[in-house]
Image (cartoon, rainbow, N blue to C red; front, side, top):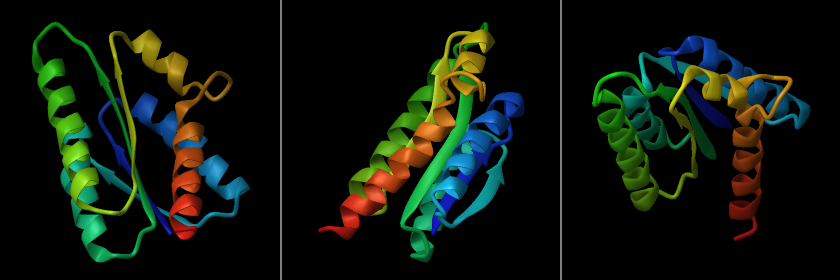
Amino acid sequence: MIAIIKAQFNSEITNLLELGCTNYLREQELPFTQFECPGAVETVVYANKLIGTGKYKSIIVIGAIIKGDTDHYEYVCQYVTNGISQLSAIHTTPIIFGILTVQTEELAYDRAALDRMNKGKEFGETAKFMIDAFEKL
């Protein structure tokens, strides 16, 4: 089972990323459960809580942090990156970092649009790869 944690903030972007991810997982017939939280920061504690349940072979965190006019962007990016890195270092459940960190909304759409590169699909592919790799160990 795969857990997908999607941040609601910037939902026009995160919804597209989630859709690309879930479409891929369905095509591969991989079971998943979806969760939501307010923003990218909360994905860290949510991922930690889900790891603690022992129910999931991989966790995908999905969010979109778009630079604004304040330093908030840097702090959020740093917190989320460090938090997921720390969880990955102490747990053996693969956490797929599906948090876009972009300068503009246009760049976010370029990475989320279903008819373009949709990074959400890549998040699903990475989760599948890691699950398969870990099962071979």
